[in-house]
Length: 361
Ligand SMILES: [Zn+2]
Image 1 (tube, rainbow, N blue to C red):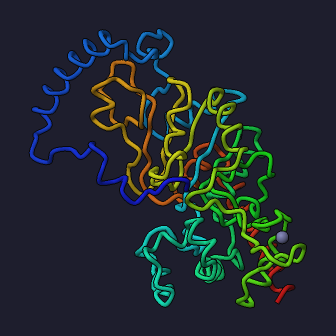
Image 2 (spheres, rainbow, N blue to C red; image 1 turned 180 degrees about the vertical axis):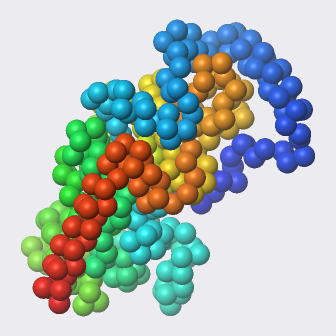
């Protein structure tokens, strides 16, 4: 969330012209390819992967979920990175608060925010933290349970296949699903911990929760002055150091990238998909295709964005499975032979969390 994402869509030059027929497009593509190669060579823009013989070998036998499943089965010690956005938490009942249509912003009308996103801006927060905490009260991880998608990620970890899980979510459901903190990168921070903005004294979720639910702004008990801000990354704040350190290390060694429930528009998270090796397969599980290579990048031969339905001779490496994340994850688990294990895990864990909640109330 370090940069605003509300203008991204309009700026993307990848809108296909609707009245070009596919035949025309193919001819155009063919010409484009020639020009692209010429320009790329002249300008030395040619992606090294284009010259790399290895990347010309087919990495997936077929561009489908089955192709991905075979790839996992055939690669012992396959190192998988998962990347997730709000889509893996929606079935838990957590509203996608970034979307102005979620209705959350209606409740904030009385605060006269200069614009809805102001609620997530550090400058505004310093001035007036009240709207943020009002929203936090509604978003607080209270009674929410991780989804089958979360438990699928935990299964990957349990099978020794998960290199790291990168999440844009601040709902702490990954932790609740039992993913250990060292396997987790909460790119946009978390509600799990907080800090006094003045003296940096650390606070825990239960402490902050109590204040937020009471409707008071959490004030530091050490310096009696600073506001305690949950460690979520607001616009205008740096991403956690851990994010930069680990992305540098992880993406270069990943064997497979699975992206779930993210619209891939918020940077720098979105461009992580480009950081894996050129022959690393990428599976998108999402309601719609996102994060695709735009025409300019394609023209210049830049390795940027996902390329579905490729016409390239070496077969491509990107697969999109369209639908909701839980269904996609269950399908993957089924095909990997872990279908029942996933269902059992979800059932047991939900029962455990329900029992815990009943005890608390
Ligand atoms: Zn303090």
